[in-house]
Amino acid sequence: MSDSGKHGNRRRGTMPLLSWGALGVLGVTLSAAAALGAFALTQRSATPAALAESGDDAVLRSTPTRVDDRRRIELVPDLRPAVAGRAPRAGTLTTFTCTPGRTVRTGSVLASVDGKDLLAISTSVPLWRDLSPGVSGADVTALQKALRKLRPELVVTRRYDTQTRRALGEIYAKAGLDRAQTTLRRDSVIWLAPGATRIASCNAGLGQQVNAGQELFVMERTVRSFRVKTVPDDLVAGARRLTLEKAKVNLKGLGAIAEPADVARLARTAAFRSWLDSGGKTPITADLALTREILALPVPATAVVSPPGGGTCLTLTDGNKLGVTIVTSSMGRSLVTWDRITAAPVSVVTSVEADETCD
Image (cartoon, rainbow, N blue to C red):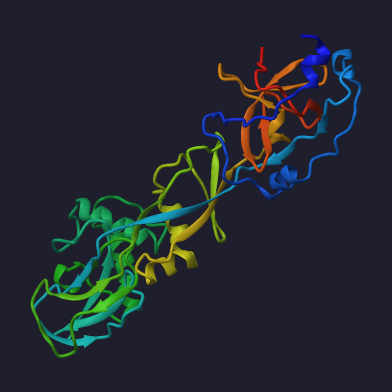
């Protein structure tokens, strides 16, 4: 077949997508969408004689644009089981200021039994014994780590030492209790699991007789981690950032988001609160985008050569083939990229024959 015949009867065909790691189809940035919808005007350029002989060959001069493969995804929180604040001793509730929605932290006092105030303390290990000067163990370590959030200069020594007693003394004083206590008595503490800060329900009442271990109130469930409900299987390869309202989290992968700082950042959003208040019925939607934008060239889908034998390419106006990877394709327009792409304009043939190859 002559060069003239080769380029004179071009058939427009449907072009399947190939993956590059995981390649984007669903969402692109506004700049990418604009690039797909507003191509540079088709123009004649200096072409090889083989193309020039065919008077109806369409040629496009297009300029690469930056895209971040932004997607709209749904986040699903993984909640810890609900935890209760329990009476550490038996007797009569002589003070009980529990209110649903109230914030409770280490140092809060919201109940007393037989006139003895009960101090709320949140630690990762339950306080299961009295802590007296010199004792050591995992419970002491957990207490010291909790106290460091209030007093950063405290050193974790695993021993119930002078600095630990002084830190507790400051909490006692703020709560109106005797700061001279040297032993932390188990029956004077309402233990709270870490992370739980707001009361969900109150299950006792002022003047009620309670037993040791009886449930006084239940804390709101706290979030352990977040995960993407459905990970798009065509994402462009690269590091990603998740954005939820003003919270931004750089992802180390597409698994669970479990770093405490990241979890706390997402849990402070109005979207999470709405999800929690609705019992999980209000979805949490966030943006997932590449941390660094990539360059991609907008072309008509008909310009992309994708033969059954494999490979994907463009036909340049000098007759050479340029191997590419499809970033996204929509409404007859495609974004493609390749190794060492630059911002320089590229001239491509916009219509290829169905049997054309990338050889």
